Image 1 (cartoon, rainbow, N blue to C red):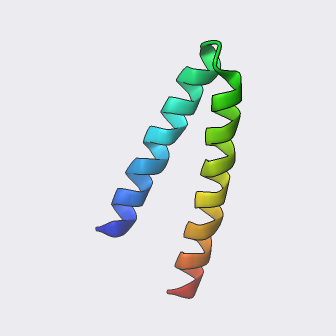
Image 2: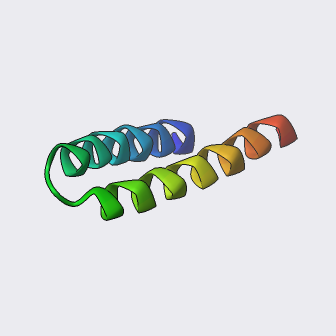
Amino acid sequence: MTKYFILLIIIAAIILAYLLYKSDKKELAIAITILLIIFMVLIILAFMGI
């Protein structure tokens, strides 16, 4: 259940980052993208730990 929740958060963040990138808030979009990358690395490490 937690895995699907994390996946939903990632999808929502990607959509949000895309919408922000399309608008004029490029700095915010870059910050969200960096956060996404950090989250993905943590999730990959968590899955490898299982």
